[in-house]
Amino acid sequence: MESLKNKVAIITGASAGIGEGTAILFAKYGCHLTLTGRDEDRLKAAVQCCASAGCPADKIATVIGDLRDKAVQQQVLDKTLKTFGRVDILVNNAGLIHYAKPTGTTEEQYDDMMDVNMKAVFFLSKLIAPELIKTKGNIVNVSSICGPRPMAEVGVYCMSKAALDMFTQCLALELAPSGVRVNSVNPGTVVSMIARRGPTGYKDDEQYAKFVEAQGKKHPLGGIAQPEDIANTIAFLASDMSRFTTGDCVFVDGGRHCVSVGVTTSVSADKK
Image 1 (tube, rainbow, N blue to C red):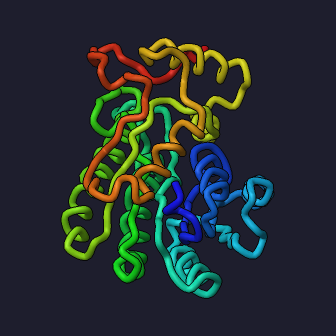
Image 2: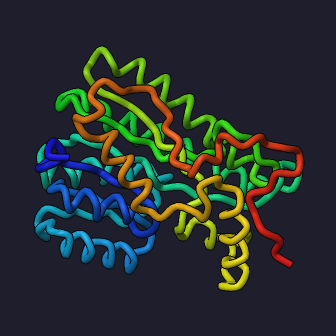
């Protein structure tokens, strides 16, 4: 991934899971980083990991805040340009999930998922696109197997990721004449904090262990992914190794997308 060296990458949701794993991998490849997150302590820990991976402290910028706030989005761009002078890569990773069937989803939960998983991505990408056109950079969106595969117990999450996949393809068509590529990765279940947050998350260690065990049985390769599994694909898509790839949604799910989805398919383990 020599082409990533000295590239400036913005990575959202970098304080844990896929975002943190991607930040650390990009640090190893010599990227300069702007990392965002809502948890200041976790983001500081991620910065330390990136520094340990070889990224100098003066090549890491951070922005603490909620990307649903347009002022925070502007801060991300402004701080990146002030620190590094350009943007080469945008990794839209920040996301959230509520475990609720469509008929059991509250309006607040609906807004949470749609605003974080889609609206914030849309407007942050729109904001940063002019800078990517200058550098002929690229965008990698972190979607989910839930985008193209219906799963009743997380219906609205599926809707938000389906919208993200379509946005990936539409934006890819718009920006291709400017030399900007736009792709997404569509993971299956990954070891991360996303399943443990919010009122419907698996906060109890025993519940989360059951969730992981249940999910592992649904991936043909067995088990669930580690953040670095997804980060490797993100790095590939962000690098010149995929210079002729755009508008693609790449499954990184241990083969789960190959499995037929029945009416009883669930992505969550029994919490009782």
